[in-house]
Length: 98
Image: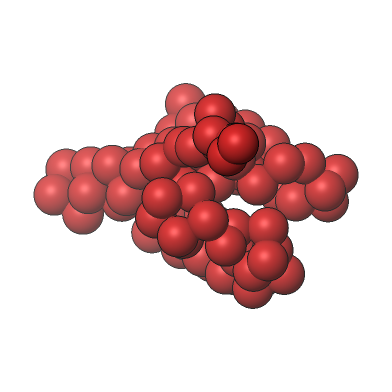
């Protein structure tokens, strides 16, 4: 009798079921990308708007807190993706809005 994995998600299929095996590499990459992108977004204009600053800081700190709390990678990757999308949108707004 074979077992079926019902925990299959987008990230598991993206990493070919090796997400937990590559946990430390994924954590390092997420830390680097989310941290640096958040800093760049704040530096390139979001510092002048309270709403933009809050929109960047809250998901960035939530992602970094999940990394520190050793949360399941599924949650970390989902929140990191949302954080990156928000940062890129605010970067685009600040580049083309001014």
